[in-house]
Structures are given as C-alpha cells and as structure tokens.
Image (cartoon, rainbow, N blue to C red; front, side, top):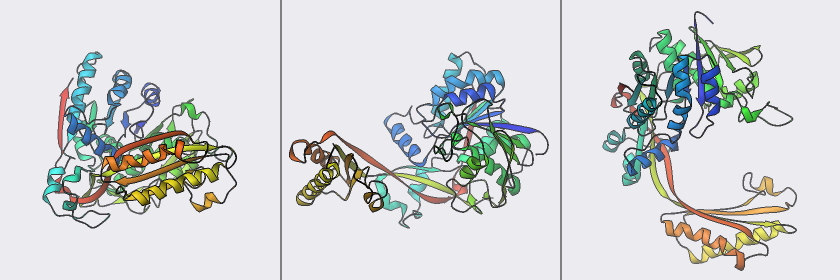
Length: 447
C-alpha cells in the first residue's frame, strides 16, 4: 500500500445484525469511519409501507439503538459514521439522530441526510420495462408501493466535504458506502476507474460485515471458526493506491483468512469481470489475496471501467397473500402419517377451490429443501408438514392454515404443534433509469 492508510470498519451487514461488534470496532478499531450497511431490496419496500402508515417512520428500526450505542464512542475517538439506515426516510432518520445526540450530550454533531433515491414519481410517469419480465412498469399499476434507485458515492462525498459527522442515506449501493470515504479522503477523481474499482473490491469485502470474518462460513470439522458467539466485524486498512488489508480487532471472535476473503469476494457476484455499481463497473479478475499475518489478508489488483449510464431501481409491489399451515408427526411411521396429512389437505384444496393460485407441500426434514434427493434417505423419526399457498385475498390464503390445523381431529394419528399464518406478499423486481433522472440532495444540520 502507498501513502497514508485509512481505516474503515463494517458495523452491520444487514438490518437485524448484532450491535456489540460495532461498539467493539468504535472503541478498539482505531477507525476513521464506521459504516453500517442495513438495506436489502425487500427491506426498503417494507420501510416505504411503514412510512405510508406513519410519515415519521420508514427508517431502520435499530437505527437509534445503534446510534445510542456507538455515537458517544465515535465522538470521543473521532470516528465518522456512514449508513443507509435512512431507508425510506433519511430526513426523518437524521432528525431522530440529532435529537438523540442532543439528549446524549453530543450537541454540535453534524448529521447529514441524503435524499433523492426515491424515484416513485418518475417511475410512474415513464413506460420502461421491468428487467425480469420485460413488461411495462405500468402493468404493476396501483400495486406499486416503492421505487428506489441505487445511488453512488457523490452525495455522500458531498456530505463529508461539508464536515458531516454522520451521513444517513436511503438506497445507496452497498459498496458505495465504503467507497465514499476513500474518494473523500484520498481525493480520487470520479472517473479514476482503476481506483474506484479497487475501492469497490474493498467495499464488497466489507459490506456483509461478519461474513468476511467467519460468519456464514463455518462448518465444524471442515471450516472451523473460533468463538462465533463473539464474532468480530472486519476492518479494512486502505492505502491511497486502493490496496487493502482486511483484518479485525485483536482478540475478537472469528477469523480473517484466505478462505473467508475468497468466499466473500465471490459472494453474490454474477460476473467477476463486470460487477456493476453506480460508481464503476468493477473487475475482480486480477485481484490477488495474500496472508500477511494472523487475521490479516492483503487484497490488491482490483480494477474498473466506466460507470453505467443507468441506475438500477428496485420496485416494490403488492402481490397477493401467502397462507401457511404446519403440523408435526413423530415416532414410528411418522413419514407415512405426514404424507397422508399432505394428501388430505391437497385433496380438499382441489375439491373446494378457494382460489389458491400456487401451492407448495413439503415434509420438512425429508424433501423441503432438496426434493427427491432428500426423500431417498432413511426414515426420519420426526417430520413436520408444511403447506403454503398464494391467493389474491387474505381470507382465501387463511383457509390453508385452517385446513392444516383441522388435521388435529380429522387427519392421521399423533398430529401436534399446529401453527398457521397469513401475510401479504411484498414482491420486488427491478428496472433501469437514466441517471440524470435521479437527483440527490444533501442536508447537513447540527444537533
């Protein structure tokens, strides 16, 4: 690595992630930036629904818990925070964080809200096609509840240039959250595709937090990981040339190894030569990994080329209801009794209809995950029946759970532990939007 080193910590890899590893990073990571990546495609659609019910809501439900835990430490240690926990309401999230900061005696903290990723109004006006089906966006009609564009580093860098201590965005792309401080601190040009590509590799390695330190990796006896109960989240030591060392706080649980870094490098990558982000099309094919110490892996060779002209937009839409029922059978002949239970429910659905559009019948522990491959194995001692289906009305979907529960007294012997549920399906799909139709705003205010 060349020049000075920037230290980035990953405080979360998803909305419900643990909080204490971020506190550990803030206290002992000697960080410059602590970054929380907390948005998935469905998460932001759910957040838009929450905001529709209450205009003050719509940001990550753990936002204030996380900020309450880390902000005093970050303030004391000079660590700046970047997050997409604003979800559907970055401005509301920033207001809430400023209020929390004042209550915590952190007056003077500068908190930025980055808005503009919500493009529902723009999407409703055009005729572009949904990527997955080729159908017009208008085919979703009034079922459409959200449209959020993946924004890149530019507004985050602008917020940092305005001395924001905390930057809160909506649907910023995951690696962009980590690339932005690199661009800001090292002064990289926004057309320096090689460095932006290298910085995106670092962002991709960090964006799932504990996954590069041994989470979602462990397999006892094959890929052992020490102390997963106290998994430490990763730190990147980034050089001005974009080369990085991935590590973690000494003494924390987990591990950083060639294997953990390789698995995360390839995680959710369709084409290693063309990883599309709002900032650059990154090329991972020349990346090299080298173990340079205990829990230290050097990463270099990331490259990139010109960014795409369009931004990906995630569309959230209502897609009916799912109804589900489950019941267990145990002991001798459990599988045969469970199979009979499925046949009874399937027969009644076929005979009485109730507008079930899709139906799935599983024996959990036998064929629920691998189908016939799993079904060929030995007789299980206990089996759980699961029947799930989709319908356009909640009442039709509820009928599935009712039928499963009725097996107590109308089905095979020994049924127990029946459960049922109905929930609305919030589906997601995607489209592309010219980037000039996405206009971001940055609002920095003092707590």
